[in-house]
Length: 167
Image (cartoon, rainbow, N blue to C red; front, side):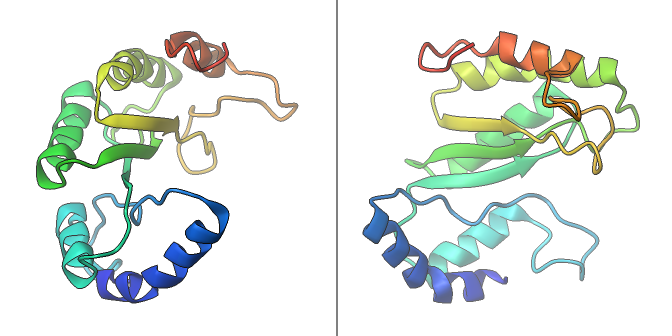
């Protein structure tokens, strides 16, 4: 949906959330390309347009995806979200090393080991979730076909430090 279409539909989303006592995350954004394949290639422009079209809409969290393969890029993105949408906690609803040429298991592990401590320590990040769709990105699966943790899944579960999250 375009930002204007999402804003027009948002009152329906708000009603569902009110009926169930839920908080709401914004439309989930990421850079998109090439132009023409999505409504806006810039996630910041999209969210700015959404909030302009829906200034009184309930949005408790900013939802975002990220697929770059290094910590400085992730830190920049989270920093931009914090700056452009102050006062909103961030839900990184999908992230993995998906955009780089090297998407090997070793690269996924390296990125995960850098990203998780940062995300755990970043006060504005309320929640995060690894994008584990191995059909879309190689070497990102956290579980195998039987549901057992993969090597990457064992690493992922070992890195979370929030006492509320079971290991």
